[in-house]
Every structure is written in structure tokens, then in C-alpha cells.
Amino acid sequence: MRSRGLFGVTIEVPAERRAAFEGSFRAERFGTAVVSHIAASAYVIRRTEADIARVAGNSLCLGLQVRGPGRLDTGSGRSEMIANGDMIINHSDLPYDATPGTDGGFQFRMLKIPVTDELTLGRSVTDLVAARPLEGSRTLRPLRALLDVLTSSKRASADPERDIAHIALLGLAARGRLPDSLPEVRGAIRAGLRYLALDIMAAQYHQIDLTPALVARSLGLSVRHLHMLFEDAENTFSRTLMLMRVGEAQRLLITQPDLTVSQVAYASGFESLATFYRVFRNVYGIAPGDARQAS
Image (cartoon, rainbow, N blue to C red):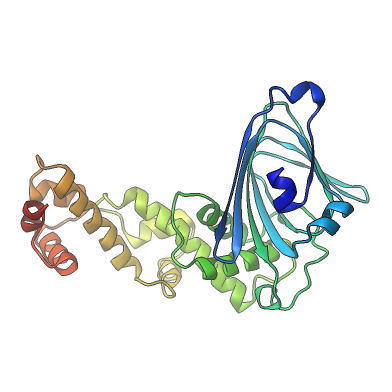
């Protein structure tokens, strides 16, 4: 019933399965967009012309089929299988028919963004039927990274409205509606790749030998390109890595009283004790030992 009211869809659950049906639904505002999470027993879902007339949205929808494959039919003979991990991009006010491929239930996340000319760079998207992104598009990796940031709790968005604009551009480019050579799309690609770099840094910051070259190689980029990703960010690559390390050091000082200050410094990725003391005092205004005593 919530899906029917919020998204304007028709849901069908066979009578013999209704007693065992279970599921959860959550939707929350994220800037100008709405993020929704659905996990439920398998059911058929349709957005019909009547549904569209009843609940029109004029929104760009970016979805992720986390679990539960199925068939997506958008009319006129257009039908494709959607597998686990596939993304679907479409305009909200077009009909579709989604049929589960198994009886094992499904999990789906979606970002729904109101359409404006500014958001789409003046392109019309009202005919964008539900489909997967184009294979081989260089926007796919940054698009997935941004979708993960905006629809999961793994990492917070640094600038929600900006990231919403970025993911809309990447979604349209991934469907062939915008060339990826546009400056706005290139900026969105950098934003998505920056989140991928942050994921690598967050997982490996404690390693003393983590360098820009290692992160760049993991992303298939040059070191120069890696540093360019952080030009529009609040901090450079080096300062971002330093803040991760000093933040971990501050946490260890408080939660691990048995560790010496030297052990804390090296466990947090600092290669020099002198550097650790200098950075810690610069960030927190006091020495590491004083911070531990104060806590």
C-alpha cells in the first residue's frame, strides 16, 4: 500500500502466497530526492497508465536490484532479464511490468530525483523507458559508486545536492542521453571516482606504505588524475589520508589505553612518531598523551 501511494504502482501477490508474505519498506528524503529500500517476498509489480495518471512523478529513477532476478517488460516487445546487481534507469511516468524470476524474494534500492531542465541540461527524458545502462560506458563505475553513497549507509555524502546532480548526469550519460565528454559529466565522473578512492583509503589508511601511486593503480588511473579527483573536494588527497589516520589515532588513544602512543601512531599508518605528534597537535590542539588523559 505504501508503494502504491508513493510510487503509483499495482502489486499482485497470488492468493495462495499472501499468508506467508513478508517484507519491509522504507523511504526517506535525501535533499530534493527520495531514497527507498524494499525487501520482500516475490510479487509482480506494474506501473500502468492508470497508475501514472493517478500518481505522476516527473522524476528520474535510478534503481539497484540488490537481490532477486526477474524480467522487466516495458511494452512494444521490449523485455530484458534483470540480474542481481543490475542497475535500472528510467523516467518515472512510463509503464512497465516486472515479474520475479524466482520465489526467493528480492531486495531493491532506488533514488528518485525530480526532473528539471537544469538537472538534465535541457534534455528531455520523458521517453526514457526502464532499462539497464549501456555496456562499456565509462560512467558505470562512478555511477555505481555514487548510487552506493546515496542509497546506502556505508559512506555519507559530502554534498548531497551536488551528488544528486552528479548522479543524474551520470545516469543520463550511461543511457546515452548525454555525451560523457561534456564538462558537467566529466565533473560527475570525477566525483564518483573520488568516492571509490575514498573507499580504498578508508580500507587501507593504516598501512604505512599506502601511497597515491597505489591508490591510483587500484583505480586504473595516473597519479596526476588521482590528485585531480580531489581538486573540487574540501581537502587534497594527502590531507584526506592524514585526517583518516589522525582520526583513527584519536579513537585508539581513547578506546585502547593499553597501547602506547608509539603503537597508536604506527597502527594508524604514521611512519614517523615525530610526524604523528606534529599532525595530532595541529588537528586537535593538544599532544596525544594529553588527549588520552583528558578523555
